[in-house]
Length: 302
Image (cartoon, rainbow, N blue to C red; front, side):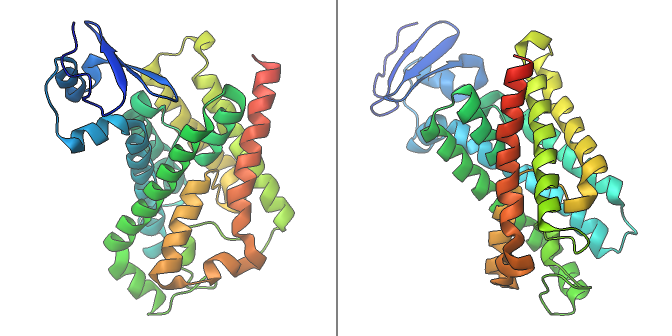
């Protein structure tokens, strides 16, 4: 197949075959199958495409990370709202974990074939350090994930706003009997120390990374369509076995994005200062746990 429009993606160099199209930029070479997107087919035949379509094509991986994280956080936070605001009459601790696990499965099915479905800065940083992902690309992934998590929290708030107002009696609370900030982010359990919370997030994220590396290890010959279900089940397992101590954040985007939203939406500065600035635990511990467990997997298994 001969390309007719060599400037279709601005300054990117590209070439096509009967089944693939390859983009060569200053940073990397991206090879895509034409059946992945109608836009690719149009570009390969030399058809002119609108600027918005060019943008979608050029930043498709980051858009996939944004949308996948938005969906994950929307579904996960929604089940927390449903259980809490209805005082346990419409769900339990188990349903919260099932909601997060199946939500992640769906998000991975949508984004995985395009971006790899990281949806988590801890995963992205571990992959960059251990598997050689470019840091410029990793930074773009993390920004997209945070934006997706923020947007997901905003959507959930809009949907549940009447129930939130009724539950909190008009007073935004961070902690306490009518706490609603905890619907969006992780806060310290008064029964445990900061060190115990750090260890809990570190271990939980470590298990997640081992599950991801195992599911995506080509030597295991796991069909690609099974990977999202395996990772989703891993999250459910983590939640029902380790989640009661810290809430099992295991994802800095899932915590920080909604936390920033609550700071803007009326809960204010206490979302960061509560628990002696506890917010760093669910944002730093998962990253360190992901790196450590990823290195363990590489050492013992690879």
